[in-house]
Length: 171
Image (tube, rainbow, N blue to C red; front, side):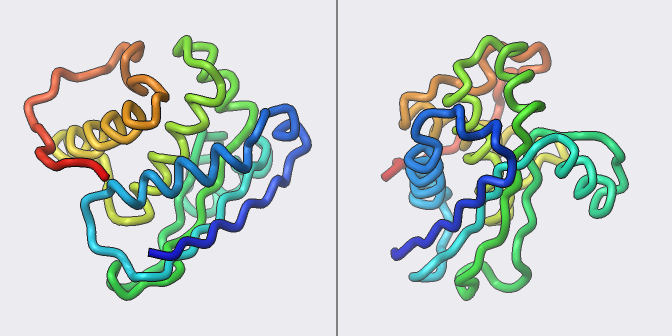
């Protein structure tokens, strides 16, 4: 599979993160390689690193929520195996840095989790129901642990005990 990742740094605060481009490339590639789905042979994803003001505007416009959020994903419509352009991921600096501190996670690890989470949304995973959430969170864990980013849900209060197991060998 060929992968093109367009990275846009739209907020200068992101320049303080060491090797943001490398982290982005590694996390997106690992997420797609291990998403357990059939993808087009050539894929493209856009990742924009913005601030809370920009993501608040997008969140209000597209989700009707006038508040910042950590990550938004905008998948391109169509059959997954035919989609060359998978979609856009937007990540907000202030929210992500605050949450990383709250959850006791190193910032690069937490950014990695947001990327994994965003990519999984682009390929069709969701967390609207308990079952969907368990499947998506288990896959996020598997990918993050494989990348040595730690368990992204380890310190969260609402972590659920998992009754659904994803039985697949990761690449």
